Length: 348
Ligand code: AQP
Image (cartoon, rainbow, N blue to C red; front, side, top):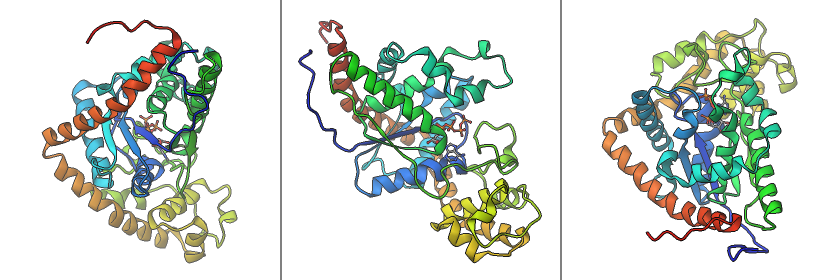
């Protein structure tokens, strides 16, 4: 057993999460992830948040757009309440520990584990899977590395990432077992709130996604008040009035989605929302939801556009975050090299 082994080991609470700058941030990213990132920071927990640009390139990204989207995502985090002095905020490619550990995890994880991932299946459905990038297949291994390079214990995510976090747990357990160490924590997903799965405004059975070809399917954090209102008013719904209890939303995916969005934005439960709007038609509910969405999102949108006027300052903030992230991850990954038997004799 290596000198690096610390057994038994307890792991201090540390939160890590990330968002891909593969497009503009959506209401789904905000309610499922970002809003809760801020809450965790404000609870005083150590929080590390990453713009996962290496994940973004698992599908084609135009280089100039990727740079722009990464800055925009950083601006979105700060505008939503992430304080770079209290949280570590950075882009993944500036901390090489992530990809180094990901390669090691590629050798721990099994092909069968990866091929069972529903995100892999969804993203290749109806397409030629043979033509998908190897990076897209190995995506969950890099995600495990993102988390475990910091020995993070808790990961706030939307519902769609639950399976990837189970795989992260499997990788940590297999690594610990293979090398007879208690080195990596077995992470806990944190999936909380009224909108852990925000659905498309055009199809209540599909996740709201930044890469959906239809802009009408999502609310972008860069949308102005008028656009937000129009998208909500045009959102697909059924003809029935709202029920007076949540059970009445069963088999009404679009109605349930709008109620959940209202609840998450207002900080209420879905049950409270249906009680307040029992019997209301969408002609009444949608304008109320639009007003609420504009009231909650407009301050973020305007702060984002103010921050985007100074890209050099954004680059400075994420560069500083990357240096702080590296100071945590580097020694952890160096210990991993030691555990797995790599010689590290180069003088720096
Ligand atoms: N619709 C959603 N509802 C709730 N949470 C969501 N998240 C994403 N969409 C929703 C959460 O946001 C975090 C970051 O996600 P991501 O950008 O890394 O990847 P994703 O889940 O694949 O998001 P998109 O928007 O669908 O991106 P593309 O289109 O590029 O694949 C995660 O915590 C996720 O759960």
